[in-house]
Length: 522
Image (cartoon, rainbow, N blue to C red; front, side, top):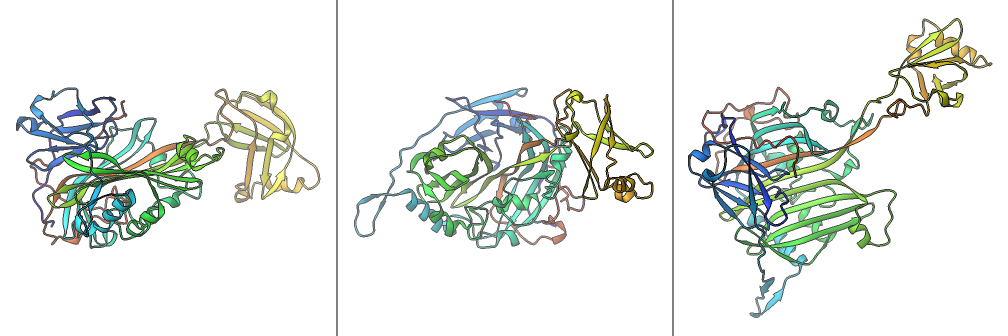
C-alpha cells in the first residue's frame, strides 16, 4: 500500500465558482494559483480564468490566496463569495523595480546583468534550487481537446507523483498512483478525435510530430517528460533539447524586464529562435534572489507555406504562422526548494473526417455491361458531368466509361467500354467467382457536388487543440516510499485502461477535480 496522509475527494457536488480577470483589461488570468490558507491545498485557474472550490471550505471560514506571475497576491474570505453563479474577482497587475546588478568578488561595485548571464546562473543553480531528496505531489490531471472554444473528450484524474528527487532519472524512476480516473460524460465526445494517432491512413495525426518528445509511455508520461526543468539533464523536446547544455547556445534572449510573483522579485526574459520554417517564441521567469526558474513558457510555430519574409523581424512579428506546440511549466517555492505548480502541454492535431458526400456502392449489369453507381445522396450538378470525370481502376488498370446512360437522384448508370483490351478486364470484374478481385476496383468521379456543395469523396481536414495538464494541489516534502508495485500506475498503457490499478481512498475530504466549464467564455 502507499504510505502517505489519508486522501479522499469531496463527496459534495456543490462548489463555489470563481473567475479571475485582469482588473484593467478584464482579460482572463490563466493558470493562476488559488490556494486555501492553512491547508496547503488549491487549484489552478482554467483557460477562461475559472476555478472552483468545494463549498465546505466556506463553512470553515477559510481564506483564498490568489497569486499569479506579474500580479499582486490577493486574499479573499471564502465566506464573502456567493454560492450560486460565478464570482468575478479582479486582480491588479504588479510591476516591481529590479536592480539588475551583482557585486563582484574583487570590488564592491555594481554590474548590470545580461539576460544570458541570468539564465546561465539559473541553469547552474538547478541542483541547489530544486529538491534532490524524494518528494511527492498530489494533483489534478486532465486531458482534452478544444475546438472552437468547446471542450471535448475530457478525461480527469487525481494523481500522486512519487519523485525520487532531481538527482534521479525522472523518466525511469518517478512513479505514479491513480486515486481516480473518469471520462467526463457531461462533455461532448468526438470518437474520431479521441482515437489514437494514425500516421498510415492519416485519419488523425500531428503535423510535424517530430517536434515533440520521442519518449514512449501513456498520456501522463508524455506530459511529464515535457517538463524541461525537471528533465534538465536529458533531451526533452525539439529546440530545447537538453536544457543545461543546449538552451543558452541555441536561443536568442531579449532584454531583462521587471515583474514579480507574490512578494518575490522576478526577471522576465523573452526567448526567440528561428529555424525556417519553424519559429520559437517564449518567456522564462527567474527569481532575482536565488536565480530559481519559476516559469518557462515555450511555443513553436510554423510559417505558412504561402508566406514569405524578407528578414527575421518580419518573421517574428507575422501572424502568417500556425502554433504547433506550447509548453507551460511553473514552479512554486516551499521554504528553500522549488516544486512543480503546474504543467500544460498543448499541441495541434488534425483529423480527416469521412466524406459527407460519397459513393455508396456499385452494381453491375453483366448482360449489358452496365455499371450503376449509387451515391449516399443526390448530386446537384449532373448536367455538368463528363466522361473525363470518371476514373475506374481495376487491378491497377483503367476501365474506361463509354457513355453516361442516366444520372438522376442518387444513381448514375454508365456503359463500360467494349474496346479491345477492356473486354477481358471487364469480364473478370463482372464474373461471379472473383469476389476478392472485386475489392481491387476503385471508383472516382471528379467535380460532382451535392446540394450543400460538398465535393464527392472529399475528406475534409479539421484542426483541433490537444491539451494534457497536471495541477499540483499538495506537495509532500518527506514521504515514505515503501509502496507496493501493484499499487502503481502502469506507465506504458493508457490511463483509461481497465487494468490500471486504482488506489482505494478514505472518505474524508481533501482533493477535488477542477472541472472547467464546457466552453471557454471570454
